[in-house]
Amino acid sequence: MIYKIAEKFLGPNNVLPFLDQHIKGGYIRKGELDFNLDSNSLANVIPETAIKDIDPYLDLEQEIIRLKAQKNAIILAHYYQYSEIQDIADFIGDSLELSKKAAMTSADIIVFCGVKFMAEAAYILNPDKKVLLPDIKAGCSLEESCTAEEFRKFREENPEYIAITYINCSAAVKALSDVIVTSSSAEKIINSIAEDRPILFAPDKHLGNFLIKKTNRPMKLWNGSCIVHENFSERELIKIQASNPTAQIIAHPECPAGLLRYADYVGSTSALLKYVETCNNSKEFIVLTEPGIIHQMQIKRPDSEFHEVPSINQAGCSSCSNCPHMKLNTLEKLYLCMVNESPEIKLPDEITIKARLSLERMLELSK
Ligand code: SF4
Image (cartoon, rainbow, N blue to C red; front, side):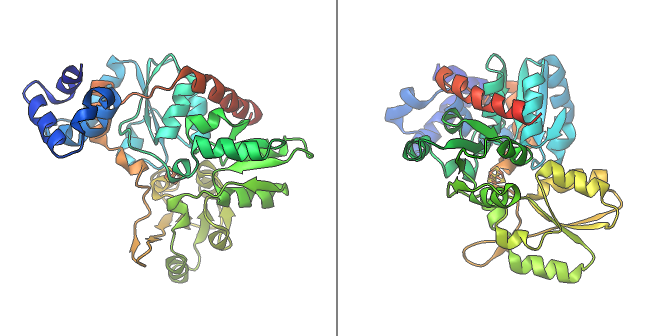
């Protein structure tokens, strides 16, 4: 079984050297081999090696388009993906738009270019379809901050509260939630909850604080945050603003309040895109969200200029603000995932059924 999966990815001559190398290197512990090495965990390891074997003259875009037609697949891509992935996708959107698209598709295979919680949402809404994620390691700091075990405890300690949970969480946390929201649907959904019902909001404290101000509803918040939006450098932002005094600052509400106070406009990724598209009083924007969105902004407003804001790390060094999870997906991994139809997202039925209820409530309430 293991040999056959490896052979599919690597070709018959490379299986034994690969397994030998990784077992010796401790990457896969030999004693756990039979127990752990399912198709997903093997796929975690293999693409890095298999990428080197892709013919460098292969036209990857053409091959992906061919595989898409051959396999009746649809490629959904989040705005934070690399521009070449956005350009090849059938649909580009934010979490809400992608969930809606996933719920409606007639394709046999959904290739989800985003992070794992998004691909899981596509699977939850389409458990009979094959859902693929080019790199199964594409996680999310918000998801990591909120384990199902801790979240269950949080709920048990607050039994009278309704649990409104941001879509950036695991399927198991969705299954423990009453209703899911995205940054574009949260305000509307919170406003639809009876005023005397107390609210728990997880896992993003910054989005939670923003929504408390927006809706005037007190909420008990989980202490999670996004590593990208939390780490924009305020000092660099001020410098960029000083050099470009007519530029508008636009920000995602996952940013801390200290950064949002500089913003001329705050909104979800799709709202930021719409704002740029329709803004008549500026042709210059400073973008406080993951810079992948700038590709679509440039397409919508070719007459405008966009500035990224660098991040700052604990050593005080500044760097790009790419999401390290989103950017794990590359064109090569997308190609390999379509050839091999793996890594595939699968969830236990019990979680899928419960999580679907909270996701469907979101789709219903955000109409
Ligand atoms: S940008 Fe932040 S919230 Fe989005 S996937 Fe990356 S870590 Fe998660």
